[in-house]
Length: 200
Image (cartoon, rainbow, N blue to C red; front, side, top):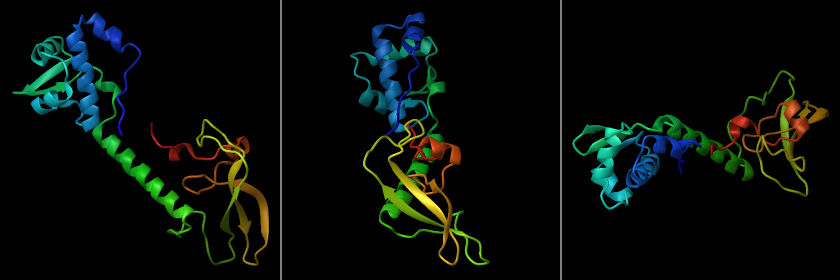
């Protein structure tokens, strides 16, 4: 799912341009459509028929083009100009989806206790300590995220040497990627890295 971002002065900008009610509705519905389809602002007749609900879209489109809210790029083709600067580009949206899917895949495999490829914290041989992850779940719940620390649910790791002895303080792990959190964030009770958070 993608999102359309409207600034708090969106309506004021349309009012300053003296858009008619029909043009305002047409413009807003078109913005929703191009973000849903991730076209980068491009529209054609098919999109207009599917997304625009006003009775006379042609008149509204002519008004939007004349006021430079839209640009005509060919017969029956337009590109939205106004407010597209606030929207994420299609390639950015695709990269975010791919990153989110990969994080979700790793999290599912971790919950299922399916081993994955060794992470940067794993080292073997030459007597170097390796990191062993153990889950501790306590009573309580809360939103996971850098803005919602939750000290009740933690993942902990301990340094274990080859003899099986543990040493060092417990360090919480990110609930999504499983890697250790920064100690300062961990002490505040955060459960995830900011980079692991799903995009809005």
